[in-house]
Image 1 (tube, one colour):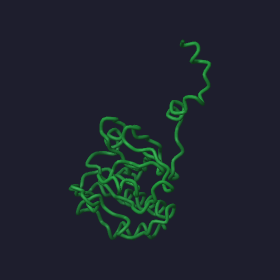
Image 2: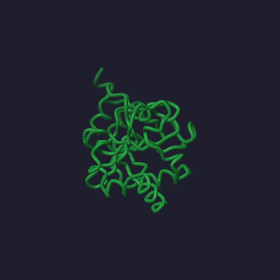
Image 3: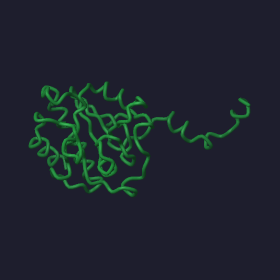
Image 4: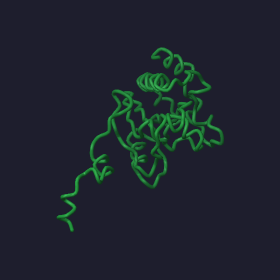
Length: 186
């Protein structure tokens, strides 16, 4: 039986081969750190679901801790991107065409891109210049790709998602600064 399987072409097992090779990222410069397939829904956005929002999150953990949570199939959570505090490094965890489970609201999950930021809502030292700059560039690029208006009605905090019980990105997140940067990089 094992010898017979070695002769079967890989085209019959696309998932195994696709998981083994690195994915191309949607955002230039992002590093591919895939979430577990148990933590998002494959889709064909924006055709299947038009995109209207970018949802800003603060992870309440470190960059590596966030990536670890998204890789854990038991967590049932993911975001499209994670931004590191120290240097603004961007990781992509879910393809933009797929539905990340980040907003806590299925309708918003289907119509948004989620960006997690390393840090804690009550520790503003994590909101560095590098983080704001790289995140704003990412948000501006997403808005350009999907024709999402660059305003606070469409670039929202997790706490602004209907039904959310979260507080992120929290009172220390500088929305005025962030939106100025998003406009700068548009």
